[in-house]
Figure: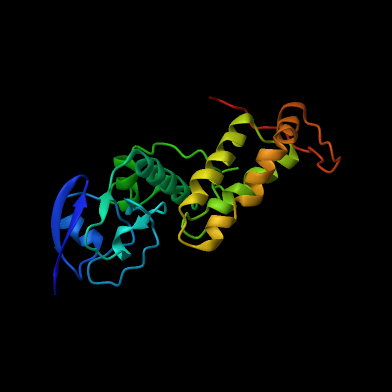
Length: 134
Length: 90
């Protein structure tokens, strides 16, 4: 186990080399939205909500499957990332009948929380699932 | 576009609406947003290249899209325009 130093949102941070970026961010108290991450299960990197920007790499990387490296410069809440996360949530919401007022999980729903936190209040796309009412 | 779940499906839906005459100007903006934002950062090759054909047509045949939406005409005489746009409230 070795210790690496990286920069997160312009602050120097040290971390253990086997940690994932998401774990380091959590340790630092930086809140990153996640849906598919769950303690104790293997990471999948499927929900794409924990995407972060790493300097020098034009592609956004999901923090939960990216391991820390010496000297990387990470940004977690840039304008581009927030816009991107909102779009992901919008597309996730359009996939099913996400009609919260008629849902038993209303108020206990991670997707709903994340949408509220990222101020996604309506979906501009077509719902892919057939509609409940015509 | 497995990384942006549903991105290509939405693109397809919008294209379908353009061809059946029920698309609006907002759809065109959405389509463009989906292509540029949804395609650039995908870790999966499909997601990166899937929007490229749509992007090319948007770049080189934009006036055809606009003719479909605003004038309901198809230069290639392929589209049938059997539907009308839903009432736009905003």
